[in-house]
Amino acid sequence: MAQQRTARLSASPPLFDNRFLDFFSRIHPSVPAIIFVPVVGAGIWLGADGGYGALAVIGFVALGLLIWTLTEYWLHRLVFHWEPDHPIGSRLHFIIHGIHHDHPNDRLRLVMPPAVSVPLAALFLFIYTLIFGTPAAYPIFAGFIIGYLFYDYTHYHVHHHTPKTQLGKQLREQHMRHHFQDHRYGYGVSSPLWDVVFRTLPRKRRY
Image (cartoon, rainbow, N blue to C red):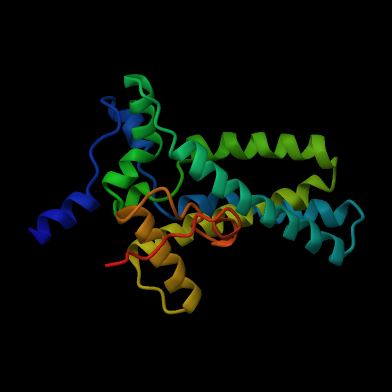
């Protein structure tokens, strides 16, 4: 029984009947770093090249990182866990996040596919240029992407490794409680900050 449960949690079914489309729904965990680490470097360089000093660039990066933590929380809470009472909506929910809850240990479905992450990143960069102007938007965006990468790899880590640090252990416990105890709590994967603020920290069961 234990082996069957492990297999079910690890092996998710095809998301699409079309093999070509389904191929792009399975992503090796190295892909986000390959795509976005150069973006981070470019954002920081453009900020420095635009005349900002080191402290200003660091501040902008920190702001972007903070914005990511809030974005991560609300994306997970409002978008990933939006379950409309309609067959099309239910199917969309399953594609976006439901399959991960049904098969949470599938190694190839733990990081965000570039077909989703790249357009979203472009949208956020556009929004930042409108709000902050350039070149300030570039290091802010770099910090945002650092946060995203930390989220993706924290998510992978807590599902497939046993963290050694106190923070890692806390994040893993919270995320496992989100999966297997009550998915209405624990929306922050890389940080518990906004779960504390909005009172959605996973609660230990009382017996």
